[in-house]
Length: 79
Image 1 (tube, rainbow, N blue to C red):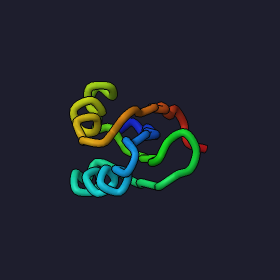
Image 2 (image 1 turned 90 degrees about the vertical axis):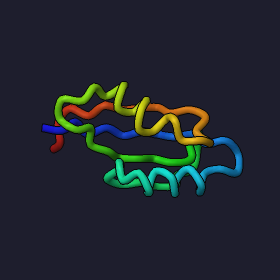
Image 3 (image 1 turned 180 degrees about the vertical axis):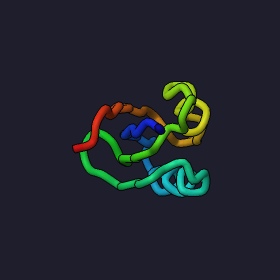
Image 4 (image 1 turned 120 degrees about the vertical axis):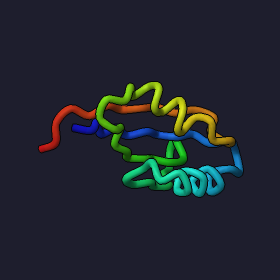
């Protein structure tokens, strides 16, 4: 069973749309939203079975130019 995580992404000023486009091209997300507040984007993704969550995010998401910071929230059970 894959692991569902939510990742909040803070982008460098002026790069939010470019970051969102790059995420969309990589097709790693289930849902991607523009948000207000401390972070610019909210992404829902499913980590493939057997993959390490931290390593997957570090390799698939964080190399995208324009990402300044991320905050990952793990999920346990859907109600």
